Amino acid sequence: MRHRLAVDESMPGALADALTSAGMDAVDVRDVGLGGHDDDDVLAFAVAEGRAVITSDVGFGSILRYPLGSHAGIVLVRLPETEWPHIVARVVAQVGALDA
Image (cartoon, rainbow, N blue to C red; front, top):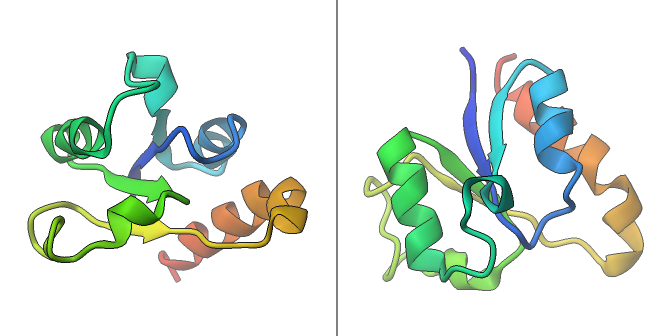
């Protein structure tokens, strides 16, 4: 299975490239003109493309606003800022583990 992912602007800029290098279909929302757009615009893009959103924006965590089944998925990554240098490798490993 090839994962289709939309990397939110709250995540490191290198994440989409790292996910793509790991064999996943990942797009950074900044690269498709959605930098600075609100969460609804980002999710609308992801839904239209059949992509799950990877974000650290807690606004995406509301299942009332973004109910299960209305999108391909939302991966909310919450790590201390001290972990940000390692986040790319961690997210790639976790998403890749979904294939196991």
